[in-house]
Image (cartoon, rainbow, N blue to C red):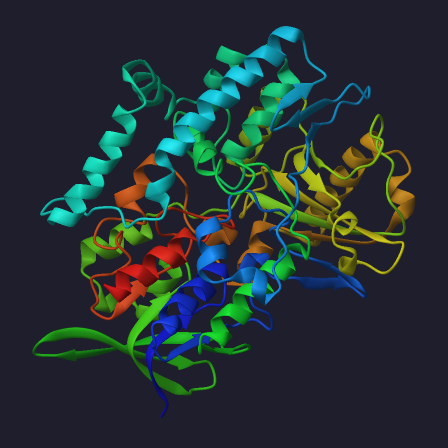
Length: 514
């Protein structure tokens, strides 16, 4: 029986980051990945011969600290030179185009308001930025170090000045619709700017929760939240993380699904001691670090019988229903969008905030909307390796699509949704259907099956006020350690959250190394 210092379950980007930091400190680390490729939701898949895509099709806030610490550029990572423009598509071709320095296609008043909005959001995002890469203090019985983190957060907010600090506290949990109405008149602009606060979550523009907080979380990285495609694509980032981990000494095994976290029981209590694979192989380790989502980790891999009942109930109640479907199209050529010279930006189809709200209402009651809203890119324009020469990939995030619709995801339900999506795209890009060589639609249910993520949720669990910071995923497991000694979390269900960012893997490794 093999034995390691640390076993990491899952070779998603957070699992690879955690493994790399631990291995750099001399630990003997084994990463076990159920799939045939690393990367989790960011892994590249061939969905049609010669055509590849990943669920994560852009990056907006990957940690520069991780890039530097792990020397990712020496392992093949090529950062994007500039972010993509965000284009709010309009059927008449009068599009709203959003860049980091300004916006076009709107009134002069909205142009001025955008500059004020961007400056305010960036100021608030910078105040929070250091705390995404820190362990959040536990609730009660804080150590001096944990109290210092609270003090640093308070000091950074206080340094905003009284007026800005009060404004931050006011807007941080506003419904996205309220924030948009305060700044802008143009509905297309409101919808496009709302997208980054809502995507991946069970939230709509009027939801009284943390959409603005999610927006601030995403305003990080080299391009201050602007979406980009690395020079070697998303696959290049994952390969660089894999290379960094293995160069540091970590072993990575693919096609190695973990079915059980082994727990020993003695007079001294419980202890995580190893894992069991699907083929029955058992591997021991001093500690187990799970990059899987919290429900899968505790309720499936550990089992409720090893958990205190109130803790198990809190894990069971985590909101994990995914609301985003993926559409991948293999195209024979570059599609022509009305009013767009070259479709090399991030394009959003949502005419106004109410279009998002109504699509959310449909999903809330168990149906995919008759009027779908989506974000799409053609990543093969930046990364030619994704398609054969002269051909292209269209990748779209479709909100709001329920994981468990009424009647389930039958063939008829899938076909009906795919038809609506193609019809919607055809309105904005006449002739697109004739270019389609193959179409793949992945519902949240499919994402759950393919990537072993409960509910197919991008963030493993909802990005909401009651499941953030020192409450993510719940107290007693919010500092990466868990009620079971030797068992840690490092996935998107931990602070700070999901997306291609790297904070959970970084923080978990540093907590373990303490």
